[in-house]
Image (cartoon, rainbow, N blue to C red):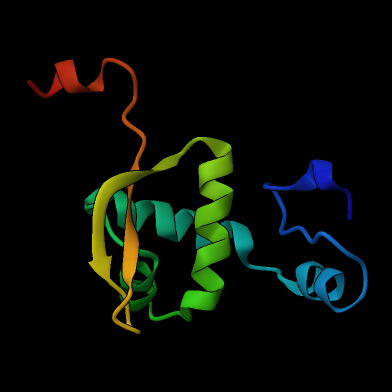
Amino acid sequence: MTVAAYPARPGSKVSGPSRDAAESVTDAATLRDQALAALRRQPMTADEIAAVLHRSVLAIRPRISELVRLGSVEATAQRRPNASGRPATVWRVVPVRGQAELFA
């Protein structure tokens, strides 16, 4: 898999198990779309998205990274505790230019 395929497809930095794992992911686009839909309802942490989607946070975090790289989501200044109690980034959908004026 080439780097150019990322974020459209899961990527890896090295060959071997990491590349094998990335190539075995078949539902990344679906999970990415589901995570984006969840964030359209409200800003959330990766743990919160995983809970809403009934998926592992380990499956969701890479999808958030892909969405960031695609320019679809961004980090907020807000932090909330994750499952381990550590501060976690709250993510939100990137506002579309002019969208705020439509709803004002």
